[in-house]
Length: 398
Length: 231
Image 1: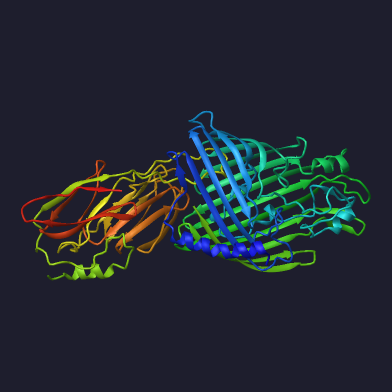
Image 2 (image 1 turned 90 degrees about the vertical axis):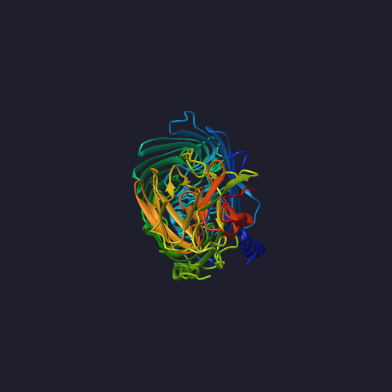
């Protein structure tokens, strides 16, 4: 265990005790409610993830993570708000994870504009930002699992791409601007884009669109020389029980430097389509989300990567409250990938992955929870093809 | 003094609760039957309590819907030691804690043990009422506008109620083992009627804790005026 992890593990029980004795409190407010501050503290432990199934683009495992975040909303007038969130993972220096202005031009109409580092409009899960809203400590594969594609490197040919299957935590290519970097997930739920977005609603229909930098796989990019992503979501709420959403996004996922050096005459876009659904009633919540994504790669050498590579991912999750304060959840998920022609034959360019996660959340107090989960992971290639992980999480929030 | 069977049963049902909570430990020797005297007065608040803040809506795509601000000025004034006859069974009491414009109304509900509380949803969104209080743990699940669910409260104590979907929604249910209590009105006035003559301890409870206590003697022929000033 590294020193920071040890320190985090030592601090967690102290924090738990402090909040366990503290009064039940909601978010902190001041200035007649126009300034609101909230926070969340979570510590998750699990055995070492030897197969890197839970590592994110931050090169952190979501199951071995101490996370502290503070968010604030300043609303000087009803039509304008400034929102900010600071987050620290494993006691590293806090980073600004969200910083944007929200503006509602017509007070009685559901039409909002947000500009800055904004929440993604694509899908639903990426906006489920807080551990307090979840039962399972793991992040769905489609929003975290690292494929062998890199933002700063391109495979010379299909054989080189195939050689990196199941090595998403550290894929290595000859044509790279950095010697080492992590791969890209379908959609990175841990980071948000910089740009502008608008949301309009009328009755049960809601439409949101965003113009931002980067792509779903690589949001928040600032060194791209103006490459933009367009994303949109249409949501329908036929009743409080149901939410149905359709999403689409298209943006450039390679860094500006990688494009200039390796793909100047080739497109390097990520295009994605998504569908999400939620049904809830009584003590039951069902959620599901599917993403189909394709990434354009330059055809540089034989055997050529003739067409964009693609992947399909999705999950279905069930939650049920079996007693006051006690919730059971289960999530099944799978990622599959398109095939490419290689010297060895036709193969999927990345190894399919499946996961089943089952867990319990117990609320000690309204804002103090304990979680425990079991996660089984299966992959069709790689050094570690199957891995079972047990995790536990302590969570405090206000 | 003789306790009725119902009084003994009610007292036994009361599990230990936080110190701020009324709990009947004993019933003193007092006059036999209520003489119809009134204890009344006004509770002045030295300082207002702030709003119950909504969590910052960083992950939203726009302005969240507005919500009402709960009235946190109301106090509950009650006898810590109740007169004889306080435990006589009442007819199946019922009360309502509404969910309206993303707020519980009222913010404080004082009831007697055995009361059934209805929780209607008057909003267009789901609500999910729950409590993890020792006096009553429950979770009503999600239900839409027009539906109502109910819970019976059989143990004295303070029950803190929340909505799982809206972090700014909370309320108190003060479950008392007898009927000698009153809520203050908008002006801070209260009135407890039909009080038998005797010596009592009067307590003022506000927003989670007892803010004042006073011993008073209720004579046989005069109403009592008891004013308080509390935080």
